[in-house]
Image 1 (spheres, rainbow, N blue to C red):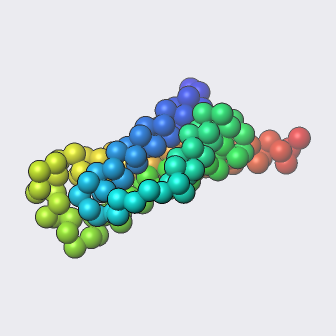
Image 2 (tube, one colour):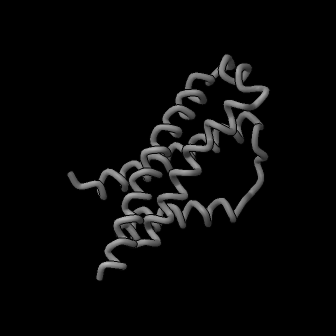
Length: 127
């Protein structure tokens, strides 16, 4: 089984769900609606690392960060005081589903990228 295509897909799905979730946070006024060039730069770096730096150490590091961001999103939100209220609100199903999907995909992306990074470092030491 080739893990690299699976890692690329899980990383891309994590990025997609992160952007949808952040957008939902802004619409619900959980996050501020302000122009942020930093967020766009981070998005570009996440996409570049996932699509262009795929089998390089730097790509594995970027995808590890994507996975960690995605995996921590449910932890951050589900501990919030307003989580039950948001879950029952209109669009709450999508909000909660996105958190579950981010947690699962982010965890898998983190594990696969850590494995790829580990193999990359071991090959460097052996060669």
